[in-house]
Image (cartoon, rainbow, N blue to C red; front, side):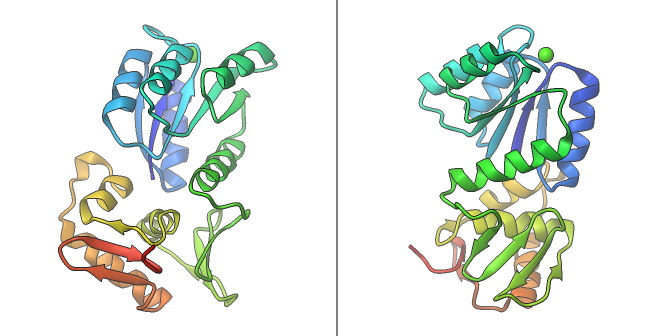
Length: 221
Ligand code: CA
């Protein structure tokens, strides 16, 4: 999952980036509204964490510009604690959720998970697709109620991305963009290696290869 973090407090931004990376998100962090607005319009993010008090362009203005341009990326706004009017303004501008500062990282992580599931039409507390149940806290998976299998960090990122897009063809490029940092620029054959590792863990029928197109998790819709 590729995540845009727009937060001008350098300490908070740095610590969030580390915690979010541990939770398996690829994070692009910027510190002002202008850069945030630009990246949100030009890159394909799964979710955005947007502070409201930002230099150059406020979080509310950023959000309004995106929504006016029909950019429906899921957005969690960071508001001042106990500021009910910021929450109201945030929702009016098109926010999907909010979190008052200061907050505990665990709360942000569960809100991100919940929002991503809702956005992709999942309404159960755990990510559960075709009998495959992903435990996002433990980064483990179980199949048809069997025992939990451990996943490596990259297997977890890959499986979560696949499970949020069941039945859709996902190209190698699309997958690598959502599970790696840009700088790392992996060979797309690496994706094939990880897909095969997941097949060994989950059974080979769950992920289908479409020659020249990519991969499909579960049945094609
Ligand atoms: Ca701020």
